[in-house]
Length: 419
Image 1 (tube, rainbow, N blue to C red):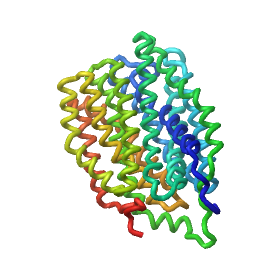
Image 2: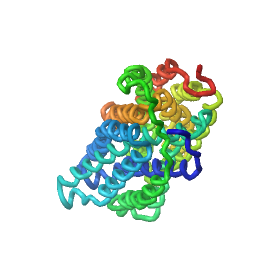
Image 3: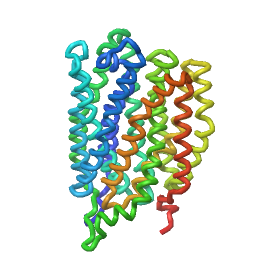
């Protein structure tokens, strides 16, 4: 590219809104997992039904590395914009499919088979979404504002959680418990699907930020080998981040299934997680541009290692709505500051020519291996050990690993990195 195009607010809004819509569709499946389980994976045992649903949710992570590689390469070779357009189109197709699939009672085993298929398509699309969007958000602005603009990747994911929680709260208030479980969740999916045409329209207006390689540029294979160490650090940081993210997002389901709290309270907790995470992620991006990425990642992680288990113990003992909302707020506010910067740092570790594919594959592998199994693992551990604090132990172990890697990784913020 001859020069960097001017960064307009509508361009940023287009990327952030589109990314939020994609994650809204993906996360809605998590938040309605109990009701989806009853529709497609009925069982006399509620835990068996929930585990089957979480396994279907995890199926969406299997195709993430494939989507990350395919669409990430499109982002590096053809452009960031076409890669983002394709990923958004695919997730629109998948979300409509899930919303309109008949129940197990109506078409038998074909129902769960279709749900798993659409989850695989969603996973492919989302696997190829993060790399191009993150590359765009750190390439388009001035270098010393990369942290803030890159933070909008994480903030948009939290905004999608807030939107899903708001929809769930409204539906749980206006519908009877029977209607909410029977078909209310489908409305939540269709609301996301209704926004797909808007997302496709705004993404067509984006400028291209992909840089043309220099005439005698280093071969891609050589670049990949030279950055394997950085890629490994990025993978481990994102593994820790995705485990923590999905344990925190599991709080509403955990509150209903394990602590037997009301669905309305659980969806309000989702809204708290979404709003708090979006604000914390954006603020952490601004701070990291000034003090560096590493301090903003490490300090919150140390705090979380100290408080996660006690927070779950208090929630289990009191089991009240204020405590649930308080735990959701505190864990999210602290974690979002750290976890958001793992995304920005990993993307900055990759050179521009392999940034889209590199970030997509690293993120997708971390999500597929560790994120896709996180909620299933904590649900199974809780049931197997009969210890309701199991999710906190799982999250704390991930935090310890993440902290070690954060200490090892090099600083990438332009204001602090050695040049």
